[in-house]
Length: 110
Length: 115
Image 1 (cartoon, rainbow over the protein chains, first blue to last red):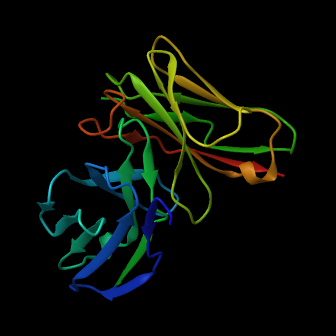
Image 2 (tube, rainbow over the protein chains, first blue to last red; image 1 turned 60 degrees about the vertical axis):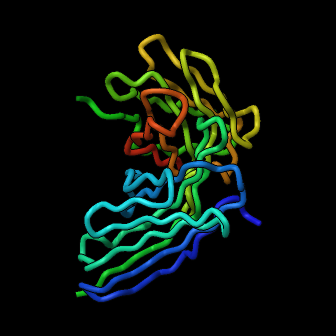
């Protein structure tokens, strides 16, 4: 099993739709998680941190299910500008190394 | 506040050559991490430098080496380049080595092509 696994997509959704991505991780000791967003040919940028059961920031909600070892990202009212690759990230126990999933590509259409 | 800057932005090298990539950390950040991102994949951790010492290393061979300078800037050196080394090399700085309360700030990356 890969350390961090994501569905590569692409997810093609119309503007205004709600879309959700899942990410599974193998290290049951992991305490915190991150979602990064990466635009085409750009660097990753931090979208959200997930330290407990979940986190919400505007249209974005991240949830953590420790029992099943997965993290989800929910985007409500999708905008064209949400089109990007979303990377699920799990730190190691020391916190000095991040393991990235392969990313899920989202394309929001007019 | 100056962000993370990397140079050069693009580089073409021949198999067997050596390359040095450079990174200036964001103002106030003392930790630098390097990642390799192959096309269509997520970034992979190469190593991290904190206070001029290596502070963790991923699954990369010894021909990948690095340095951190007193001003916290950093270099990534790759010897004996192979075709599979073609990738985007990302530098990220942070306030401290642990990522829990100190998110990574990435530079724009250096795109290396090995022919």
